[in-house]
Image 1 (cartoon, rainbow, N blue to C red):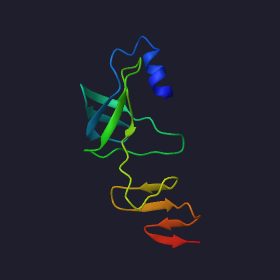
Image 2: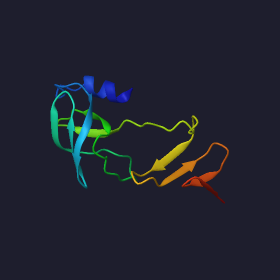
Image 3: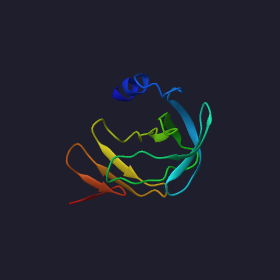
Image 4: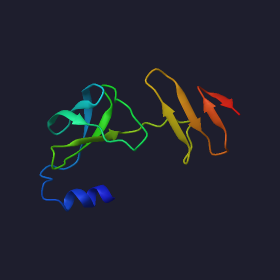
Length: 112
């Protein structure tokens, strides 16, 4: 994976990537307990997507020359999601699912 090659090829990466638990979060920083306690980490997300991880989420911390970044949370896909499908969801229960057959489900209901 490119992330592993990037990390191992840079001398600034004293620590290894680690999985931890989000202990606290606000609009743009998180605190993650992993191998070490990581305070005020920025959250890296694809362009056009914004989210704030919830406390208790398992996350991946990637060391960087600036100290580290929360690379995201480890997804726990529901059983009803098939390979190739995409789900956006919130902690409050709202969801949008893009199905392999072309259907779009919003909160479980198909829209056309």
